[in-house]
Image 1 (spheres, rainbow, N blue to C red):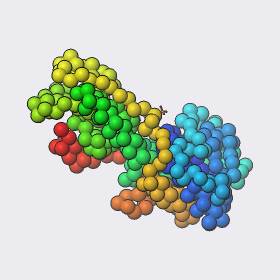
Image 2 (cartoon, helix red, strand yellow):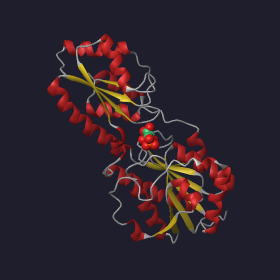
Image 3 (cartoon, rainbow, N blue to C red):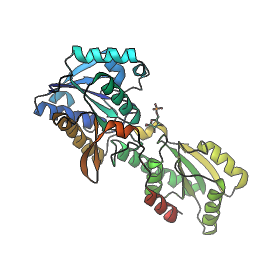
Length: 327
Ligand code: F6P
C-alpha cells in the first residue's frame, strides 16, 4: 500500500470500553487538522469485511466525548478469522482508497490488526481500549479507569447493605484472565480479600482471614473475585466456604456488563484524546504497525507484534499492599 497517508479507516473492536468515542473524536479531528480524511468502519472487523463505511469529519464527532460505548459499534468478528473474508476486507479498503487503519480495542483486536497488516502490508496503528487493562506496553488502556470507578461505586453501595445485615459479600468483577481490575477494586473499596487469576487461592486462607476479622468484631466483609480466577465462579467459592465456615451469611453479586457502560471518566477522556492524536501522528511519522500507549505519563509506540506476544503483569507491590492493609 502507498506510504503517503491521505485517507484512514478507524474501527472499534471487541468489548466496548468507555472512552472509545473520545479516541475516535480525537483521531478524526487530528486527521482533519493534517488534511487527512477519516472513514469510520462500523462493527469492527465485521464492518471492514462487509464494507460498512461512513465518512467522518469534525462535526460528525460532536457531542460524543462524554458518551460511553462506541458510536461506530463493535463486534467480535468470527468471519475475520477466515483468510477469504480478510481478502474481502482488503479489497474494500482498496476500493475506498483507504491507506491505513486505526484499530481501537484490546488484545484480540490487536492480534487481528497484526495479522491483517502482515498479510496485506496495510499500515495499522493500535489504540489500547479494554476495561481489563491487560494490554502489554501501556500503563493504561482506555476504559479501565471508568470501569474501576463503576466497580468501586457499586461496592460502596453493597457495603451499606452488608453492614446493615452483618453479611459477607462475594462481588465478582470482569477482567478475563487478568486480576488488575479486581486487585485495584479491592484496594480502592477496602475489601478484606481478593481472589485473582495470577495468585493461587486456598479456601483456608479466606477462612483464616474471616476468623481473624470476626475476633476483632468485624461485622461484615467484602471479597472481590476476579472472573478469571482458577478456583471457580463466586457461587462455587461461596458454597464451598459455607461448608467449612458459617459465621457469616454470605451473598454473591456479579457486577457483569454494568462495568463496561456509563460515561467515561475525565481520566479516560483525556487518555483517549491523547492516544487518538498520537495514532494519527504515528502514521504521519511512518511508525506503522505499532501500539500507541502511555508509560510513566509519556506517549510511546511499541510494535504490535511485541504487544500481542506478551502479557501485562500484575503489580506485586499493589498485591502486597492489599494483603497487608485489607482486613
Ligand atoms: O475484555 C473485556 C471484557 O469485558 C472482559 O472483562 C469480559 O470477560 C469479556 O469482555 C466479556 O465479553 P462479552 O461482552 O463478549 O461477553
